Length: 401
Image (cartoon, rainbow, N blue to C red; front, side, top):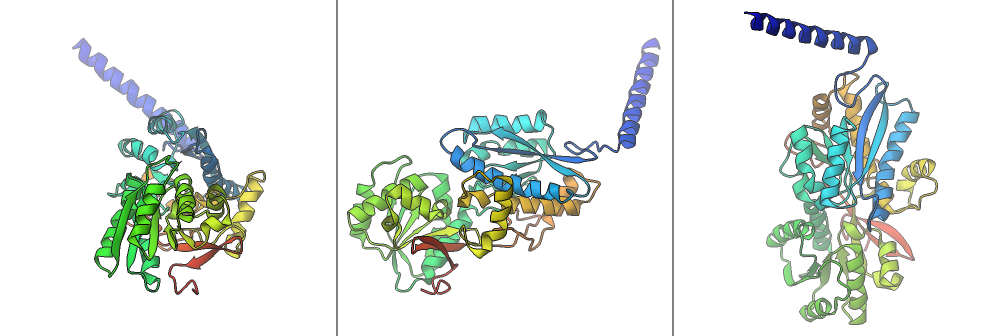
Protein backbone atom coordinates (compact mmCIF):
# COMPACT_ATOMS: atom_id res chain seq x y z
CA UNK A 1 0.00 0.00 0.00
CA UNK A 2 2.83 2.35 0.96
CA UNK A 3 4.60 1.61 -2.35
CA UNK A 4 1.44 2.48 -4.33
CA UNK A 5 1.06 5.78 -2.45
CA UNK A 6 4.71 6.63 -3.09
CA UNK A 7 4.30 5.82 -6.78
CA UNK A 8 1.22 8.04 -7.04
CA UNK A 9 3.05 10.84 -5.27
CA UNK A 10 5.98 10.54 -7.67
CA UNK A 11 3.68 10.64 -10.70
CA UNK A 12 1.99 13.69 -9.26
CA UNK A 13 5.30 15.47 -8.80
CA UNK A 14 6.35 14.63 -12.38
CA UNK A 15 3.08 15.96 -13.77
CA UNK A 16 3.46 19.13 -11.73
CA UNK A 17 7.02 19.57 -12.97
CA UNK A 18 5.95 19.13 -16.59
CA UNK A 19 3.10 21.60 -16.17
CA UNK A 20 5.45 24.10 -14.55
CA UNK A 21 8.00 23.77 -17.37
CA UNK A 22 5.25 24.16 -19.95
CA UNK A 23 4.05 27.32 -18.23
CA UNK A 24 7.60 28.70 -18.13
CA UNK A 25 8.05 28.04 -21.86
CA UNK A 26 4.74 29.76 -22.58
CA UNK A 27 5.63 32.81 -20.47
CA UNK A 28 9.06 33.07 -22.10
CA UNK A 29 7.56 32.69 -25.56
CA UNK A 30 9.86 29.74 -26.30
CA UNK A 31 8.77 26.82 -28.46
CA UNK A 32 9.41 23.29 -27.27
CA UNK A 33 10.23 22.39 -30.89
CA UNK A 34 13.94 21.50 -31.31
CA UNK A 35 16.00 24.36 -32.67
CA UNK A 36 13.26 26.99 -32.43
CA UNK A 37 13.17 29.84 -29.93
CA UNK A 38 11.26 33.08 -29.78
CA UNK A 39 13.94 34.83 -31.82
CA UNK A 40 15.91 32.18 -33.70
CA UNK A 41 15.80 29.10 -35.94
CA UNK A 42 18.87 26.89 -35.63
CA UNK A 43 19.96 25.41 -38.96
CA UNK A 44 22.78 22.89 -39.13
CA UNK A 45 25.19 22.92 -42.04
CA UNK A 46 27.99 20.55 -43.02
CA UNK A 47 30.38 20.09 -45.89
CA UNK A 48 34.03 19.47 -46.75
CA UNK A 49 35.76 22.30 -44.88
CA UNK A 50 39.07 20.42 -44.77
CA UNK A 51 40.71 17.99 -47.15
CA UNK A 52 41.30 18.07 -50.91
CA UNK A 53 37.79 19.24 -51.86
CA UNK A 54 37.52 22.05 -49.27
CA UNK A 55 38.09 24.44 -52.17
CA UNK A 56 34.53 23.56 -53.26
CA UNK A 57 33.02 23.11 -49.80
CA UNK A 58 33.49 26.65 -48.59
CA UNK A 59 32.03 28.53 -51.61
CA UNK A 60 29.04 26.18 -51.86
CA UNK A 61 28.19 26.60 -48.18
CA UNK A 62 28.98 30.31 -48.20
CA UNK A 63 26.49 30.88 -51.02
CA UNK A 64 23.69 29.51 -48.86
CA UNK A 65 24.96 31.38 -45.79
CA UNK A 66 24.90 34.64 -47.79
CA UNK A 67 21.19 34.13 -48.52
CA UNK A 68 20.44 33.45 -44.85
CA UNK A 69 22.43 36.54 -43.79
CA UNK A 70 20.48 38.64 -46.28
CA UNK A 71 17.17 37.37 -44.88
CA UNK A 72 18.32 38.15 -41.34
CA UNK A 73 19.27 41.69 -42.40
CA UNK A 74 15.77 42.10 -43.82
CA UNK A 75 14.09 41.15 -40.54
CA UNK A 76 14.26 37.37 -40.50
CA UNK A 77 11.49 34.85 -41.01
CA UNK A 78 8.26 35.42 -39.11
CA UNK A 79 10.21 37.41 -36.52
CA UNK A 80 13.06 34.90 -36.16
CA UNK A 81 16.64 35.06 -37.39
CA UNK A 82 18.48 32.07 -38.81
CA UNK A 83 21.44 30.80 -36.80
CA UNK A 84 23.93 28.59 -38.67
CA UNK A 85 25.84 25.81 -36.88
CA UNK A 86 28.67 24.58 -39.09
CA UNK A 87 30.43 21.20 -38.99
CA UNK A 88 33.18 19.71 -41.15
CA UNK A 89 32.45 16.43 -42.92
CA UNK A 90 35.74 16.48 -44.90
CA UNK A 91 33.98 14.61 -47.76
CA UNK A 92 34.43 11.48 -45.64
CA UNK A 93 31.45 9.18 -44.89
CA UNK A 94 32.38 8.48 -41.25
CA UNK A 95 33.24 12.10 -40.46
CA UNK A 96 30.11 13.33 -42.19
CA UNK A 97 27.88 11.00 -40.22
CA UNK A 98 29.59 12.13 -37.00
CA UNK A 99 29.08 15.78 -37.99
CA UNK A 100 25.37 15.17 -38.61
CA UNK A 101 24.98 13.36 -35.29
CA UNK A 102 26.62 16.29 -33.48
CA UNK A 103 24.33 18.81 -35.17
CA UNK A 104 21.26 16.82 -34.16
CA UNK A 105 22.20 15.74 -30.64
CA UNK A 106 24.47 18.46 -29.35
CA UNK A 107 23.49 21.57 -31.32
CA UNK A 108 19.79 20.65 -31.26
CA UNK A 109 19.16 22.12 -34.71
CA UNK A 110 15.70 22.47 -36.23
CA UNK A 111 16.82 21.17 -39.62
CA UNK A 112 19.99 20.52 -41.59
CA UNK A 113 20.99 22.09 -44.90
CA UNK A 114 24.25 20.78 -46.31
CA UNK A 115 26.21 18.12 -48.11
CA UNK A 116 28.38 18.42 -51.20
CA UNK A 117 29.92 14.93 -51.49
CA UNK A 118 27.43 12.28 -52.54
CA UNK A 119 28.94 9.21 -50.88
CA UNK A 120 29.44 11.07 -47.61
CA UNK A 121 25.89 12.46 -47.62
CA UNK A 122 24.44 9.04 -48.38
CA UNK A 123 26.33 7.58 -45.41
CA UNK A 124 24.47 10.01 -43.13
CA UNK A 125 21.05 9.51 -44.74
CA UNK A 126 19.63 7.29 -42.01
CA UNK A 127 20.49 9.85 -39.33
CA UNK A 128 17.94 12.29 -40.75
CA UNK A 129 15.32 9.58 -41.14
CA UNK A 130 15.81 7.93 -37.75
CA UNK A 131 15.81 11.27 -35.91
CA UNK A 132 13.02 12.75 -38.07
CA UNK A 133 15.09 15.84 -38.81
CA UNK A 134 14.33 17.69 -42.09
CA UNK A 135 17.29 17.68 -44.46
CA UNK A 136 17.79 19.84 -47.55
CA UNK A 137 20.64 18.66 -49.76
CA UNK A 138 23.12 21.41 -50.61
CA UNK A 139 24.90 20.13 -53.73
CA UNK A 140 25.28 16.32 -53.66
CA UNK A 141 23.78 14.73 -56.77
CA UNK A 142 23.57 10.99 -56.07
CA UNK A 143 20.03 9.76 -56.82
CA UNK A 144 19.87 7.39 -53.86
CA UNK A 145 20.07 10.29 -51.38
CA UNK A 146 16.60 11.55 -52.31
CA UNK A 147 15.15 8.52 -54.12
CA UNK A 148 13.13 6.62 -53.03
CA UNK A 149 11.26 9.48 -51.42
CA UNK A 150 11.52 9.89 -47.69
CA UNK A 151 9.47 12.49 -45.81
CA UNK A 152 12.54 14.12 -44.29
CA UNK A 153 14.90 14.48 -47.29
CA UNK A 154 14.65 17.08 -50.08
CA UNK A 155 16.94 18.37 -52.82
CA UNK A 156 16.96 21.21 -55.33
CA UNK A 157 20.24 20.29 -57.01
CA UNK A 158 20.19 18.25 -60.19
CA UNK A 159 20.38 14.55 -59.45
CA UNK A 160 22.49 12.28 -61.62
CA UNK A 161 19.43 11.06 -63.51
CA UNK A 162 18.32 14.61 -64.27
CA UNK A 163 21.84 15.61 -65.32
CA UNK A 164 22.06 12.63 -67.67
CA UNK A 165 18.67 13.53 -69.12
CA UNK A 166 19.82 17.08 -69.90
CA UNK A 167 22.92 15.72 -71.65
CA UNK A 168 20.85 13.32 -73.70
CA UNK A 169 18.36 16.01 -74.72
CA UNK A 170 21.20 18.21 -75.95
CA UNK A 171 22.84 15.38 -77.89
CA UNK A 172 19.53 14.34 -79.43
CA UNK A 173 19.07 17.91 -80.69
CA UNK A 174 22.48 17.98 -82.41
CA UNK A 175 22.39 17.47 -86.19
CA UNK A 176 23.78 14.31 -87.78
CA UNK A 177 24.57 12.57 -84.51
CA UNK A 178 24.06 8.81 -84.68
CA UNK A 179 27.05 7.27 -82.92
CA UNK A 180 27.94 8.29 -79.38
CA UNK A 181 30.91 7.26 -77.26
CA UNK A 182 31.10 7.36 -73.49
CA UNK A 183 33.94 7.78 -71.01
CA UNK A 184 32.95 7.47 -67.37
CA UNK A 185 33.96 6.71 -63.82
CA UNK A 186 33.08 3.23 -62.48
CA UNK A 187 30.93 4.50 -59.59
CA UNK A 188 27.36 5.27 -58.63
CA UNK A 189 27.80 8.95 -59.48
CA UNK A 190 28.41 8.06 -63.14
CA UNK A 191 25.99 5.12 -63.12
CA UNK A 192 23.02 7.37 -62.30
CA UNK A 193 23.77 9.48 -65.37
CA UNK A 194 24.28 6.35 -67.44
CA UNK A 195 20.89 5.09 -66.35
CA UNK A 196 19.14 8.13 -67.85
CA UNK A 197 21.26 7.88 -70.96
CA UNK A 198 20.56 4.18 -71.46
CA UNK A 199 16.81 4.71 -71.16
CA UNK A 200 16.92 7.58 -73.65
CA UNK A 201 19.12 5.78 -76.16
CA UNK A 202 16.76 2.82 -76.13
CA UNK A 203 13.96 5.08 -77.35
CA UNK A 204 16.03 6.94 -79.95
CA UNK A 205 18.07 6.31 -83.09
CA UNK A 206 21.36 6.79 -81.23
CA UNK A 207 23.94 4.00 -81.08
CA UNK A 208 26.53 3.61 -78.32
CA UNK A 209 29.70 2.97 -80.32
CA UNK A 210 32.05 2.71 -77.32
CA UNK A 211 31.83 2.80 -73.53
CA UNK A 212 35.15 3.23 -71.70
CA UNK A 213 35.93 3.43 -67.97
CA UNK A 214 38.43 5.87 -66.50
CA UNK A 215 39.32 5.32 -62.85
CA UNK A 216 39.25 8.13 -60.29
CA UNK A 217 42.68 9.75 -59.81
CA UNK A 218 43.81 8.49 -63.22
CA UNK A 219 46.80 10.39 -64.62
CA UNK A 220 46.65 8.95 -68.14
CA UNK A 221 43.74 8.30 -70.51
CA UNK A 222 45.67 7.14 -73.57
CA UNK A 223 44.04 3.70 -73.76
CA UNK A 224 40.53 5.10 -73.41
CA UNK A 225 41.14 7.85 -75.97
CA UNK A 226 42.52 5.45 -78.59
CA UNK A 227 39.57 3.08 -78.18
CA UNK A 228 37.08 5.92 -78.50
CA UNK A 229 38.89 7.27 -81.55
CA UNK A 230 38.74 3.84 -83.19
CA UNK A 231 34.95 3.78 -82.69
CA UNK A 232 34.59 6.99 -84.77
CA UNK A 233 31.81 8.58 -82.69
CA UNK A 234 29.89 11.69 -83.71
CA UNK A 235 30.00 12.96 -80.12
CA UNK A 236 31.69 11.90 -76.87
CA UNK A 237 29.82 11.99 -73.56
CA UNK A 238 32.04 12.52 -70.53
CA UNK A 239 30.86 11.40 -67.07
CA UNK A 240 34.01 12.50 -65.25
CA UNK A 241 35.06 14.75 -62.38
CA UNK A 242 37.19 17.81 -63.25
CA UNK A 243 40.67 16.37 -62.57
CA UNK A 244 40.07 13.25 -64.67
CA UNK A 245 38.19 15.23 -67.34
CA UNK A 246 41.28 17.40 -67.74
CA UNK A 247 43.45 14.29 -68.16
CA UNK A 248 41.05 12.91 -70.76
CA UNK A 249 40.89 16.15 -72.76
CA UNK A 250 44.68 16.51 -72.81
CA UNK A 251 45.07 13.02 -74.23
CA UNK A 252 42.15 13.51 -76.63
CA UNK A 253 43.91 16.52 -78.14
CA UNK A 254 47.24 14.67 -78.15
CA UNK A 255 45.91 11.71 -80.11
CA UNK A 256 43.47 13.55 -82.34
CA UNK A 257 40.13 12.50 -80.86
CA UNK A 258 37.85 15.20 -82.24
CA UNK A 259 34.86 16.72 -80.49
CA UNK A 260 32.23 17.63 -79.78
CA UNK A 261 32.49 16.49 -76.15
CA UNK A 262 29.54 16.90 -73.79
CA UNK A 263 30.32 16.77 -70.08
CA UNK A 264 28.22 16.47 -66.95
CA UNK A 265 27.43 19.22 -64.46
CA UNK A 266 30.67 18.39 -62.62
CA UNK A 267 32.68 20.27 -65.26
CA UNK A 268 30.33 23.23 -65.76
CA UNK A 269 33.12 25.56 -64.64
CA UNK A 270 34.74 25.22 -68.04
CA UNK A 271 37.39 27.87 -67.41
CA UNK A 272 38.59 25.90 -64.40
CA UNK A 273 38.60 22.79 -66.61
CA UNK A 274 40.64 24.66 -69.24
CA UNK A 275 43.18 25.71 -66.62
CA UNK A 276 43.49 22.15 -65.36
CA UNK A 277 43.86 20.75 -68.89
CA UNK A 278 46.43 23.26 -70.09
CA UNK A 279 44.64 26.12 -71.82
CA UNK A 280 41.50 27.30 -73.59
CA UNK A 281 42.30 25.18 -76.65
CA UNK A 282 41.59 22.10 -74.52
CA UNK A 283 37.93 23.06 -74.13
CA UNK A 284 37.31 23.92 -77.76
CA UNK A 285 34.10 22.18 -78.87
CA UNK A 286 33.48 21.07 -75.26
CA UNK A 287 30.05 21.50 -73.67
CA UNK A 288 28.83 20.95 -70.13
CA UNK A 289 25.47 20.88 -68.41
CA UNK A 290 24.63 23.41 -65.72
CA UNK A 291 21.65 24.00 -63.47
CA UNK A 292 22.51 27.72 -63.14
CA UNK A 293 20.71 30.40 -65.14
CA UNK A 294 23.98 31.78 -66.43
CA UNK A 295 27.74 31.90 -65.93
CA UNK A 296 29.54 34.37 -63.69
CA UNK A 297 29.37 37.87 -65.14
CA UNK A 298 26.12 37.32 -67.03
CA UNK A 299 23.08 39.53 -66.33
CA UNK A 300 21.19 36.50 -64.99
CA UNK A 301 23.71 36.19 -62.16
CA UNK A 302 24.27 39.84 -61.23
CA UNK A 303 21.81 39.91 -58.30
CA UNK A 304 23.27 36.79 -56.73
CA UNK A 305 26.84 37.87 -57.41
CA UNK A 306 26.16 41.07 -55.47
CA UNK A 307 24.68 39.11 -52.55
CA UNK A 308 27.67 36.78 -52.36
CA UNK A 309 30.21 39.59 -52.59
CA UNK A 310 28.45 41.60 -49.89
CA UNK A 311 28.83 38.87 -47.28
CA UNK A 312 32.02 37.19 -48.52
CA UNK A 313 33.99 39.99 -50.21
CA UNK A 314 37.32 38.16 -50.03
CA UNK A 315 36.16 34.97 -51.73
CA UNK A 316 37.03 34.18 -55.33
CA UNK A 317 33.79 33.66 -57.23
CA UNK A 318 33.19 30.37 -59.05
CA UNK A 319 30.15 28.44 -60.19
CA UNK A 320 30.30 26.68 -56.82
CA UNK A 321 29.58 29.98 -55.08
CA UNK A 322 25.98 29.75 -56.29
CA UNK A 323 25.37 26.01 -55.90
CA UNK A 324 23.83 26.28 -52.43
CA UNK A 325 21.65 29.32 -53.03
CA UNK A 326 18.58 27.76 -54.65
CA UNK A 327 18.10 25.31 -51.79
CA UNK A 328 18.43 28.17 -49.28
CA UNK A 329 15.62 30.00 -51.07
CA UNK A 330 13.49 26.84 -50.90
CA UNK A 331 14.13 26.54 -47.14
CA UNK A 332 13.27 30.19 -46.48
CA UNK A 333 10.09 30.04 -48.56
CA UNK A 334 8.84 26.96 -46.70
CA UNK A 335 9.75 28.40 -43.27
CA UNK A 336 7.69 31.49 -44.05
CA UNK A 337 4.69 29.50 -45.19
CA UNK A 338 4.93 27.20 -42.16
CA UNK A 339 4.03 30.23 -40.06
CA UNK A 340 5.17 31.63 -36.71
CA UNK A 341 4.05 28.51 -34.80
CA UNK A 342 6.88 26.59 -36.39
CA UNK A 343 7.27 22.82 -36.15
CA UNK A 344 9.24 20.36 -38.22
CA UNK A 345 6.06 18.73 -39.50
CA UNK A 346 4.57 22.08 -40.58
CA UNK A 347 7.85 22.90 -42.32
CA UNK A 348 7.82 19.59 -44.22
CA UNK A 349 4.17 20.09 -45.17
CA UNK A 350 5.09 23.52 -46.54
CA UNK A 351 7.99 22.07 -48.54
CA UNK A 352 5.74 19.41 -50.06
CA UNK A 353 3.27 22.14 -51.06
CA UNK A 354 5.97 24.10 -52.96
CA UNK A 355 4.95 24.81 -56.54
CA UNK A 356 6.97 26.73 -59.14
CA UNK A 357 8.87 28.64 -56.46
CA UNK A 358 11.74 31.08 -56.97
CA UNK A 359 15.06 29.25 -57.32
CA UNK A 360 17.46 32.19 -57.18
CA UNK A 361 20.32 31.59 -59.61
CA UNK A 362 19.07 28.19 -60.79
CA UNK A 363 17.70 27.48 -64.27
CA UNK A 364 14.38 26.19 -62.96
CA UNK A 365 11.42 26.76 -60.69
CA UNK A 366 11.25 24.67 -57.53
CA UNK A 367 8.40 22.21 -57.05
CA UNK A 368 7.96 19.43 -54.50
CA UNK A 369 5.13 17.03 -53.73
CA UNK A 370 4.53 14.17 -51.31
CA UNK A 371 5.71 11.72 -53.96
CA UNK A 372 8.61 13.75 -55.38
CA UNK A 373 11.26 15.54 -53.30
CA UNK A 374 13.52 16.40 -56.26
CA UNK A 375 12.65 20.05 -56.67
CA UNK A 376 14.68 21.14 -59.68
CA UNK A 377 14.99 18.99 -62.80
CA UNK A 378 15.78 21.51 -65.54
CA UNK A 379 19.15 22.73 -66.74
CA UNK A 380 20.97 23.97 -69.79
CA UNK A 381 24.31 23.63 -71.56
CA UNK A 382 27.36 25.90 -71.48
CA UNK A 383 30.45 26.25 -73.66
CA UNK A 384 33.40 28.63 -74.02
CA UNK A 385 33.54 31.33 -76.67
CA UNK A 386 36.14 34.06 -76.94
CA UNK A 387 37.60 33.02 -73.62
CA UNK A 388 34.31 33.29 -71.72
CA UNK A 389 31.67 30.79 -70.61
CA UNK A 390 28.38 31.34 -72.40
CA UNK A 391 24.97 29.76 -71.75
CA UNK A 392 23.56 28.08 -74.85
CA UNK A 393 20.18 26.88 -73.64
CA UNK A 394 18.81 23.34 -73.32
CA UNK A 395 19.12 22.27 -76.97
CA UNK A 396 21.42 22.70 -79.95
CA UNK A 397 18.84 24.75 -81.87
CA UNK A 398 18.17 26.96 -78.85
CA UNK A 399 21.90 27.59 -78.72
CA UNK A 400 21.74 29.21 -82.15
CA UNK A 401 24.27 26.75 -83.56
